[in-house]
Amino acid sequence: MVAAPGYGARRLYQAYLAAWSRHVDAVLTGPQFAVLSAIRAYPDADQTALAGAVALDTSTMADVCRRMERRGLITRHAAPHDARAKVLELTEEGAAALAEVFRRARRLDEALLEGCPAELRPHLASLFNDLGAHWEGVAERDEL
Image (tube, rainbow, N blue to C red):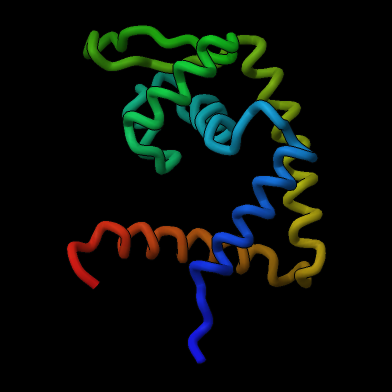
């Protein structure tokens, strides 16, 4: 019998969302955390470039950024090279929120992987990332 990898992935994701909401932040979502982290990692990058860095489509990225801007976590301004492009910056409040959520997220990561032998943890994270990239490619195929 063939295992159902999609079911397993969905179950993992649902459990992760529940754990994130309970132990990390019930308001700041995983994608918002990813965007805040990318803004810190790539200063002066525009919104479209950062969307690619965090694997969000541009319309989802725009929605995420609007919500975070309303909350005072980021600012957006026209890029010097292209007035249509928006450069994102963390506010002081955004930097503080990112630091706190980062601390809690690392604690969650440890708890999620505590059942896995320590020497396998980096390989497991790499496998998840590789599978994610592969599954994104499968989703983009015209046919299977």
